[in-house]
Length: 217
Image (cartoon, rainbow, N blue to C red):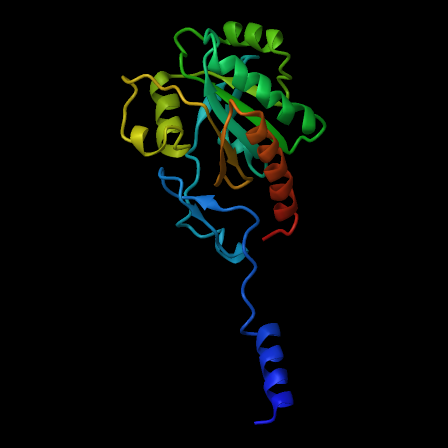
């Protein structure tokens, strides 16, 4: 077969059936080992993709927040407690970068779940939010039952990875992990909330997710 015919055949193959599918901008995470899965964008809506379980919690204003309120929104989740003397204030300060970067974007939210709901009442969270310059319209400090928060953290967000997945609410939860969730409740990123460079990476990944969602797959 002449070389010109071979070249044309290969080119047509690439442009049609042989062309590789477009991969998603960011991976998805289906298991607490946090092995990334890079999938074609057409596969992201599969029922086999892990999603954050439904929840209903209260924020620092006393308003209820559920997973339904976040449909279609990108959000960042982490776990803290207001009387934490070291790691939690550092994470909160670092997450200010995300609050400032998306201050005028109603499609991006932050959710900080207390791991000491028996201490962190609505009033306590409101005081903490004011002290840490948190905008309650964008950044929700959440409280509720210990059992619900701990199950959500360990089995939905994989907040303690594999080591914590099967722990129950009798074992204290404390993690520096920050999680990125897309508009369809899929886990798309994990970051160390104590590292400013990781927060910069998180900011960039949110922009990547916004671009990805604009393609409407």
